Length: 428
Image 1 (cartoon, rainbow, N blue to C red):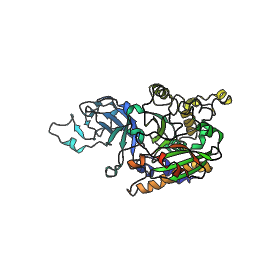
Image 2: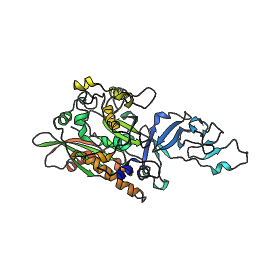
Image 3: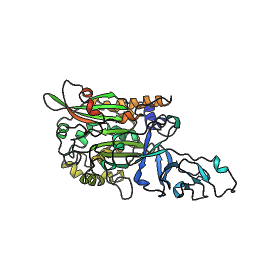
Image 4: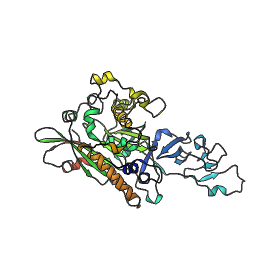
């Protein structure tokens, strides 16, 4: 278990906190590109790690991410006019470009140079993989651009969604690296889930509910091997990549299905954005796959109309169906892989008290991930390079493989765990 002080260090992400300083050293998924779809479209609110921001796409298509509140009288720029290569405050007309420069002050005398002294907080942005990414750390320490495989593929090969999760990002992310829960929480839904159906790996998961974990540090984070019984000669390994500070790649089920991945980005200390990505490295996603993803199936979720909040949420007990639970149509009675996960993670409360935990052998990845994050926070305080901050750390894959019992998973699956452009991934 963690001490109260260690728990506080892990979950607090405001500017000036240890974790806040660490997380700002990485490129951050800030919003979907579809939220600001065209030049001079309406600006949108974005909150990241407790900072209230406004995103907009200017007349030339450049992306700005500014402090929400105007430097003049602190009116919200959400109500501003996005026009002529800048965002103009609706209160007194002060106008800012994407770099936060004040380029016009119509309320000041024509000869005034006062505007040159004003600099609105602004963060650099790039668009990759259908996502707007931002960097909120020291400019001189800005890392290489993300090269997660899904962010580098043609648009037709990728589907990205996000949803609001009402919990701290840590307990959401810990769920993503907890491979043992799959045999229980999703037990009765794997056969009919579009991303799992028709693969022998499901039978291994159901048959062996006591996976043995081997976790090793990688350059970018962790390599998490979950070993299950297969036959007299082989083990079935599901090998998960955890890439710092908040990415996972889900071990695949069959090469005919798309790969899956997640990211968990703090909005504040009690809510986060849960990003879900399906992608295939060698082909476009089929229309039937896209239809299922748009409907919120698999790792995606159904929304309340016009929002990124899920239809099943804590106000309605996640639409739990006790009869479905009794009939073994759902282990928890909650519909959908994603909802089964976030309902339980949110049930812990906005910030879990980790001093009450009693961790077992299946929690090895969670224990080591916490240690890596706390150690990285100390490294970030020294302005030193971090795990997961280089493009080469992102060029990895997860895998599902059968290996002889005598072969260490990191050796037997070595070739399967790196991105090979144009080649399919490895999966049973």
